[in-house]
Length: 382
Image 1: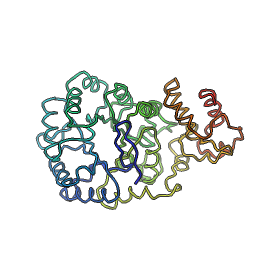
Image 2 (image 1 turned 30 degrees about the horizontal axis):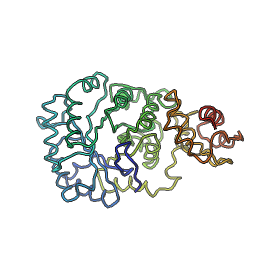
Image 3 (image 1 turned 90 degrees about the horizontal axis):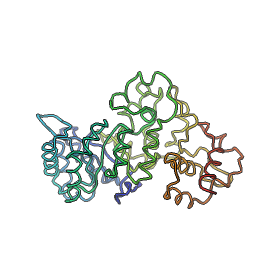
Image 4 (image 1 turned 90 degrees about the vertical axis):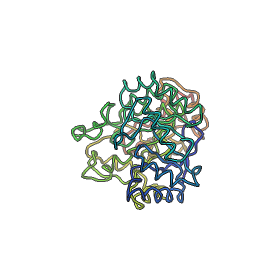
């Protein structure tokens, strides 16, 4: 298992982690099975958005004697009321729900406390100015949570939250179909067939800027819906008009800026095994570029996917890294010092480009690589 730092939190997390969707299976017997399998394979991170007390209790029991082996991301504002899940901003309900969660999980703290499901700007402004954020800050101060996170499907809202300085971890939906959709306060827009009837071309700029801003600010991204609820794995359901493999979906998410881990939904042992097998997959099995280039309903023409099909460069320039640093700079409309430092330590720089064009002949997305190298040389000075 490979591990990555979760932004600036200092937490070292497995790049494959678990979402809680499968914990309820077999009368919650799946919980222990999945956590046993996770531990055996080096997975140390999981998300628990559900407020179902039966599931929370099963997680608490499964963690007995090994709490420190797992980093828990669990959700503030997700409660159980009248026998069902409820998202709430009522501070009394929020506090009661959080204390119940600690009790059921049989733990004194949560590693990442997620402010749950914030998809509208009004909701974020209410949280920012109201008691929910203050409660999260209190929980962090007293050690009940170690870091404050926020879950969202809306890049506009997520950007405002990240730029506030309060949010250390962002849980966000990342996959090659959603990344082409504009911001919306209605999550259902991401799934609607009608939004894919006309060909979609290139990544939504707000989403790209969000990932790059998280990278710059040190906000770690934990990915949800990497498989689009499974739709991307089925040609008859995929909005792209063509199925992807789980390895391709995982690799796409893990190559986005700031992404630390992908939360995979697993209802069975075989489903979790499939996701874990990413760690041993070949470069060819992970490669999503040619599949993306052949999508009948979606075009990524002109957009660098950091797939490295442009390699090898005769001057040994890491073209994908140079382009990533160039895009980070363009997104901020300035040259951040951290980006400059990362660029400078590259063994070879854009100014060494001899404009042979070999890279452009190999690029599946017709990216103007030579122009990018010229821009990078102008911006970074070498």
